[in-house]
Image 1 (cartoon, helix red, strand yellow):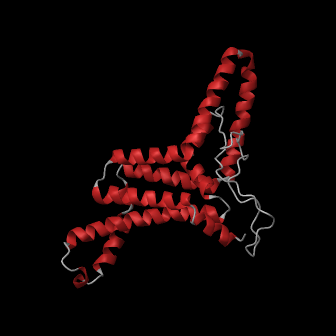
Image 2 (cartoon, rainbow, N blue to C red):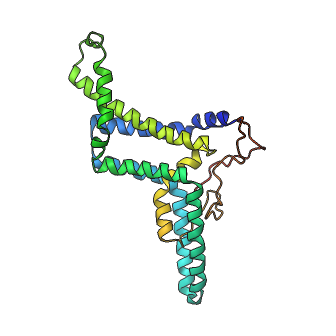
Image 3 (cartoon, helix red, strand yellow):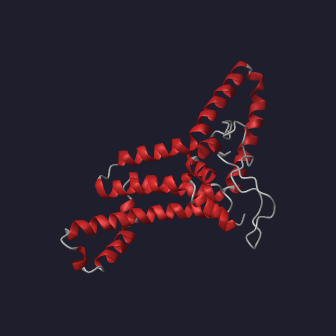
Length: 246
């Protein structure tokens, strides 16, 4: 499989299409019809749960088990501390290995913050004005009897939503180009809050979709093998489906 074939396969996946269309639909409704910070919180909480629910559940289970063992057997506390340090450094390695997906996830949740705090209008003002330039360049005779002021405003806001969704798709494309599956990329991006929590509280376990321990770089979300310069895969591939962030 060539790199281009791999990227096209991920772009056609339902995970990729549904995520981009969901963001586009949400932003269009939010900007055009009813801007409400509560909707922002609801949408991104749903995004987080949809991408990280399995890992979140397993992390809570392992945390309860670890807390119970240390509470019942306090003499194991020094061992637990050593394990905690090991997990902390392993997760730093995970962040470094998957820095593209981590940066993409930070940008996604940064979008959530700017939407909630309504700073998005300042940041997106150039895009909004570009949309206005495009629509006002269209002869008014082509628009018939439309209410031009309302139409222009709706077009500019919809254009802004499309640009944001396109940038989100570009972030995913960037990861596909580097071998990530659509599921793996979205899982890491959506799990960024858990990554931050796990770095602060390293004894929490992060578990892969198949239930195996996946701290550090043990998880596999990518094309197995490098792409050769001419676009061919160096060796046979084993694609990890439904892999979750370690």
